Amino acid sequence: MPTTPDLSVAAWRKSNYSNPDGGNCVEVADNLPGIVPVRDSKNPGGPVLIFPNDSWSTFIATLKTSHRSSS
Image 1: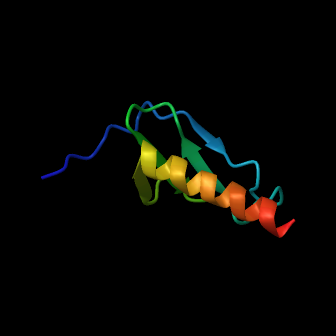
Image 2 (image 1 turned 90 degrees about the horizontal axis):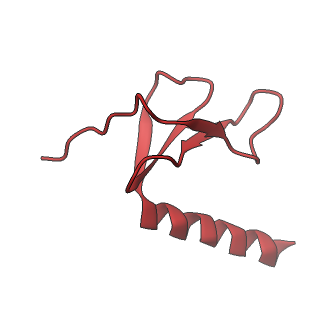
């Protein structure tokens, strides 16, 4: 059974693409080995999605490629 990672040492940072007015804010912590936790910055005590590093990297690369092709 998987264990819950210790997120007490997570260094959260807000996405550069988050809304500066406080809406649609996503935070990620990329200082934990092997995982990238993601949360809603308006609810820091709420649920956290945890992605393996390789899955997160693929997701971000896909977003960047999609963004470039639509510009």
